[in-house]
Length: 379
Ligand SMILES: CC(C)=CCC[C@@H](C)[C@H]1CC[C@H]2C3=C(CC[C@]12C)[C@@]1(C)CC[C@H](O)C[C@@H]1CC3
Ligand SMILES: C[S@@+](CC[C@H](N)C(=O)[O-])C[C@H]1O[C@@H](n2cnc3c(N)ncnc32)[C@H](O)[C@@H]1O
Image (cartoon, rainbow, N blue to C red):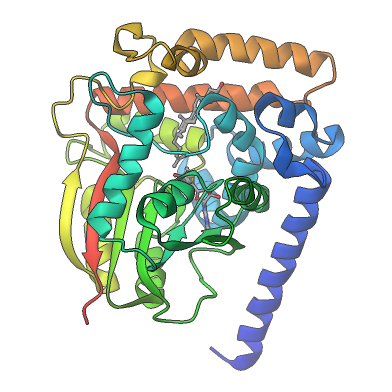
């Protein structure tokens, strides 16, 4: 690439970042980090809120044709940025500050199961005290806070959503972890870190937003020290998935459109992408394939029998089919009263589609949100 075209790309990237940061502040307000869930939804600038939702709908309007898919792949940065601008409040309201699924043991509370899933990844990655670790696609920093507390390591969280970065920084300060954690804006498809920087890298349910898995894994490979480990919970379609089967494809589309994913890839593609990036795969283990008594997707069903503790009733109520209908009705009232941005119910509608697709994919064993890969960069 010539130096003038490289300079042009750099300037386009910095303009995009500036635009996204300015829009974030106008939309969520200067004290954006301090409000969560429905309070955050109410404290948005209503005009910008409407604009944010229409930006999101432009990309995620349910179109399932190849052309729409191609557009989402090309526009992955803006499309995921706009997705997380509008869903983050709902995620925090319904799920908490770790945006991923987990396995559940009998008798185990929801929050403990989520934390254990994070500890397990840290353990498999071999994270040690004082390691410098990169969290790729860090959300609002729930896993980074847990993993740093569990291991004592230092973590840099990389994220392309400004709203989530502000929140992650605020939570880290509140939990007195700001000396161990830092959160930076960036695109995992083109990282700004120097090569060979990190002892370990992990990614939790984030790299599925990449338009090309080999590219994101190659970036991770580049910034990892030789001999370092990369551990990931990847979202994949399983071996049972047949792209030519219209019912299978419909489930994959629901997951893509409802979860802000340009294209769902299968296990084979993810495996090849890791190998082509230069990694040696040490573990490839689909954690949904364990005959668990309590399925990973249970919070999104209406199956009360799986709720393990009384304290989990509040979470389950919000995540279950009935709870989601009630949330949609409540958000509809807020929208009519003008205290939630116009179009908010379209967001709950898309999240409903996500929930339906995820449960259908889980039940049919076509989809896994926890394909664990542990891979090494050779010395
Ligand atoms: C999008 C990716 C790659 C990962 C996120 C996984 C999960 C944390 C989310 C997937 C679907 C989400 C839904 C909710 C919370 C977060 C998820 C489970 C809600 C329960 C939030 C409250 C809304 O009223 C309904 C949502 C349904 C989908
Ligand atoms: C489902 S969330 C998971 C967040 C976090 N790993 C957790 O478990 O709480 C996916 C995250 O990936 C981030 N992300 C998506 N595309 C990205 C990109 N191109 N570069 C950096 N981060 C990205 C999103 O902003 C979001 O924070």
